[in-house]
Amino acid sequence: MSTLGSIGVGGSPARKTESLASWGALVSACAAWMFDAMDLQIFTLVLFPSVSELVGSANLGVVAYMGSLIVGWKLVALGLGGIAFGIAADRIGRARTMIVTVLIYSIFTGLSGLAQSWWQLALLQAIAGIGIGGEYAAGAALVAETWPERTRACALVIMQMCFAFGFFLAALINLVVGPIGWRFVFAACTAPALITLFFRLFVQEPKRWLAVREQHRRAGSVADSLFTGLLGLFAPGVRRRTIVGLLAAASMMIAAFGGTTLIPVWVRALAGADTGLAVTVTSQFFMLMNVGGILGYATLIWSNDAIGRRWSYFLMAFGGAAANLFMFTQIETTGGLLLFAPIFGFFVVGGFGTFAVYLLELFPTRIRATGQGFCWNAARIVTAAGPVATGAIVGAFGSATAAGAMATTIYFIGLVAIWFGPETRGLPLPD
Image (cartoon, rainbow, N blue to C red; front, side, top):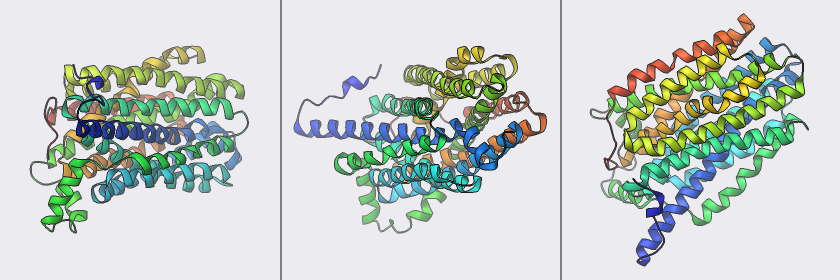
């Protein structure tokens, strides 16, 4: 079985340099992705206190609907930013793109704490979303192209695992800073901007990307890559991979975001009028959910190679559907919700680890970040409908049960679509 231990720093100077570059790429991508997830999740945790204050209402239906609109706008911005910066990563480099995106999401998440109306909060969160969406395409391509074939899948899942750590960190910040006020929670999320200094000093562009860029430069085709990048995703031989990647990603994202956006409202309903209990339980749920998510990612390190990419996705999506349906229809107490949180997180959060490897292996180097960014982020744009729809259903029925059940059905699109894509286990990255 492949392990990261096979990458050392001994041997020839050239091998030592390559090993240091691999580890530098992984550490930087992991940090950027962890803080990316933290800034993505932080609004969900402060949704109720922030939106209720800004709209001047504590009505569950009103807050759920207005909050879902902000989440929806943010997801659209995530998608557009991811597609744009995916193209940028193929054009100007993976490391340079990461620096820009981290600065964007750090600064505008912090500025969100200054919002004086719900639409100002929505605008600031949307701009932060542009950076949040753009970071992953660059970081994942950086890791994929600097790690050797035998350990690439393991490195990519470890990077994806940091998404759960980011969610956990967001919950921890809310638990510690949340009682002071939601504005201070946003302010605490500006710290990731400091890691861009590390990127600037220590992270190099992948040799594989540099070689392909040089080939295109010599062929005189660099100037038209802005057009050929997106068009190339729908060329014969690639089109089917693009469609499968998009459907598989969108299915899991719509269901997962639709469900997790409902959790603060669901906790509020279970906790009743006890606001302090609701804040505590919401933070504890997300922390426990992401403990389960980390276990899910760890399982994928084994299953991606043992049973393949497609079966790993199928089992995670099926488990996510079952966990989502059970939580919103059978659990009736905050205690039961906390006990179930790790199981929910194992599938719903851990399932995203299937994309960490599969999407990158579908596309050649010249359009890898573009292809991965398009599938991941076009899915995010479609996903914006999920929180908006579930928020509207909560407003109509006064309960999260019906909305949670609706989110469950979306998983079945991915359960079918994944079998129309190739199995990429054991194959080298296409160039």
